[in-house]
Structure formats: structure tokens, C-alpha cells
Image 1 (spheres, rainbow, N blue to C red):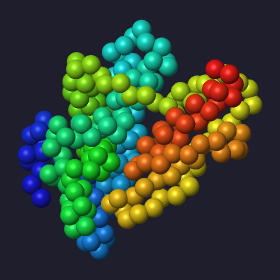
Image 2 (image 1 turned 135 degrees about the vertical axis):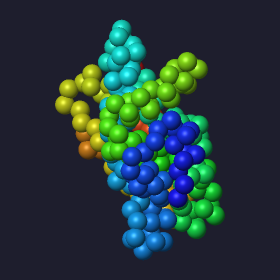
Image 3 (image 1 turned 180 degrees about the vertical axis):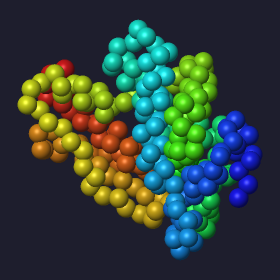
Image 4 (image 1 turned 120 degrees about the vertical axis):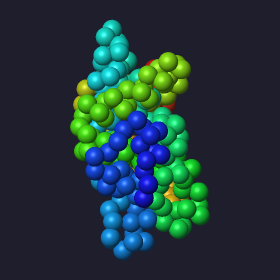
Length: 229
């Protein structure tokens, strides 16, 4: 697999190209190969952690006067699926992905959740191949571009709900995945949000994160009415 065009777009030359190739390998492709290659799911897990750290440090440096809550909200807008999909599109990441036949036919190269996951996996690959400093430099280019354009608003209802409930003592909150229905390339997730063990709202989305955000949005409206705010 020739990843030179991607390396050129990234401004990075991999020492071990197998990391990059794995980052571009969707589980649908790996399954069709009968286990002869690994999907990008493990790299996505690592990349998610690297992303949180790198973006947190960059924001901490860029905005010395922002409060913890303001930094948290701004970070949410830079690491959400919409933002990650935009980063992937800048790199034209979709055309480099290794997809199974079904995923290919269903438009997987343009699917936001798939592109966002692949971008996180690619960041994990950079971290393993060239270290945290390069991962930070790589992400810095995207963040500078987003911030220069004016970061698009992103309402993080999960954080808002948590902050609202933290005003009150002895209140617990939890999310539960109630269902994940449909084929792998087109799943629908249903999530419930629980306050003190009682389900108060549900959300449905094409990703678990989207379903949680919708559940949190509905729950926030309910608890604000209950507490008279």
C-alpha cells in the first residue's frame, strides 16, 4: 500500500509504515482477510487518549486566562466527531482507507464516524512511530487552523448536565447503552441517562457519543425543571 501521498499531506514520514497502514484498516477489511491483518480499533483507543492530552496541553498554552470549565468546553468542540471528521477531510483520509466490500459499497469512505475513528487511529500511529512531540506538532496544525477560523460552537450537553447536578449533594449520574442495532456499517445506538439510579431520558444516534449527547440534552431540560431552574 502506497502511503506516500498521505505522508505528504501530513508532512510526516513514518519510520515504520505498518503503523500507518494499520491505522487505515477498518475492521470490515480485517475481517475479510481472515485475521491476517489488524484493524485500527486498538490504535483508535490509543489515539483517543493522545488526542485528549495533546489538545488539553495546547489549549492550556494558547489560553492562559481561561478557566477550567471554559477550557473543557473549548476542548469538547475540538475533539468531537464533527471536528475529527473535518480534520480527516482535510487530509482526504477517506481515499486511503482499507474497507471491506460491504463498507465500501455503503459509502464508508464518507461516513463521519468512520473518518473520525480513522483520524484518531492515525494519531495513535504517529505517537507510536515518532513520539508525543510529533503527535503534538501534527495536531497543532489543525488546532491553529480551527482557532484562526473561529472555532465552531459545540454544545457539550454531557458536561452541562454534570456541572448542573454537581451543585447538589448526594446525586449520582450514569449512562447505559441500552441497544446497538443494525449492521456494523450502519448501527443505531440507544443510550439511557440515569440520575440516582432512575432513568430520566434516552437518546438515539448513529454513534454512542451522539446518543449520549442527545440523552444528556433531554435530561438537562428535565432536571432544570425539577429543580426550578
